[in-house]
Amino acid sequence: MRTISPILASRALWQLRIRKRPFVLSHGINARCNMHCDFCEYWKEEKDEMQTEDILHLLDEAKRFGIKYYNAWTVEPLLREDLPRIMAHARTLGLITSMITNGKLLKQRAHELNDVDYLSVSVDGIESYRDIRGMDFDDLLAGIEMAKEGRKNPLLMNCVISGQNLDDIEPLIHLARKIGVWVSFEPLHMSEGIGQDVWDRIGVHDMAKYVRTVDGIITLKKEGYPIINSLTYLRMVRDHDMDFKCRAADIILNVTSDGWIEHCRVQKKCLGHVSDGLENVWKRSKEERGMTVHDCKGCLFFGYVEGSLLFDLRPEVMAHYEWI
Image 1 (cartoon, helix red, strand yellow):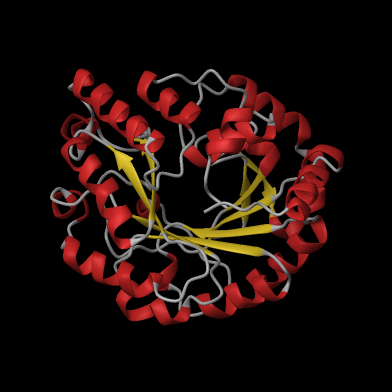
Image 2: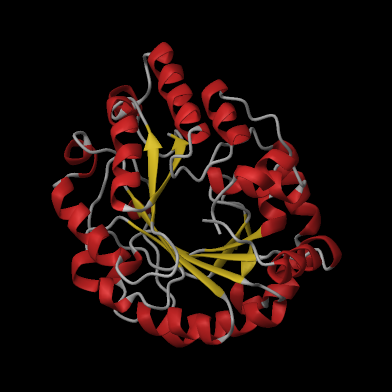
């Protein structure tokens, strides 16, 4: 899958290591959701949403700031009617575009996603999917099939490993190969804003089974199945090992639906507002970003971990992390 352009790689290194600015704009493009999963805290937060023109202005400024990659996510981007205009504007600026969706509206809006380079769909199981997401898996699969038609880059199914879907992991990998998409995995992150009763229900309680499951992912990865995660990361997931230097705050600029710039999706430390100017917020928050990383207990969100390992030029990750 992966043919990283030397030009893109050199631009990334220049932006990150020479200019010391982020490469990715991760934008919580809206504050509404059409699923209301009880393990998710984002839809429960009452926030405003930036107007279309304000988002287009943000993209213009991000381009000038050196951003090369625009990711639209939380809570459900397809609920924004102006999404095609936003993604088209990002593409016009020369940005690589990506989007994360729960897939509920894919059948209706797949034809509007031509300007999304990398499309990721949350797929947390097959047999267990209805219990986890409250939607029939066949409906989701129909949307995925429609969305992947004519795409230049393979569609990605992102699966969060929990106590509810351990039996579904291997079948999901085989399905990914069968339908011609890729799959990624990351462990359930126990957010502080979610009640203990939810974690008691969906958390992993059989650790031996969990380890066997992740070992199975590693084996299938080695056999060439379409799993994007690196072996280094998968071993971290298996062992709950967070022994890496987090570079998320150096790589990714996080912007909420109402325009606040945050340190990351875990810490949610407010650094400033987009109205203050991206460069201004970035410069004045340098010390605060460093302190936040130092005090963080860590996470295993694959985008943060894999990105950090790539930043540090880890050979195995550079060879086997397949996304982009």
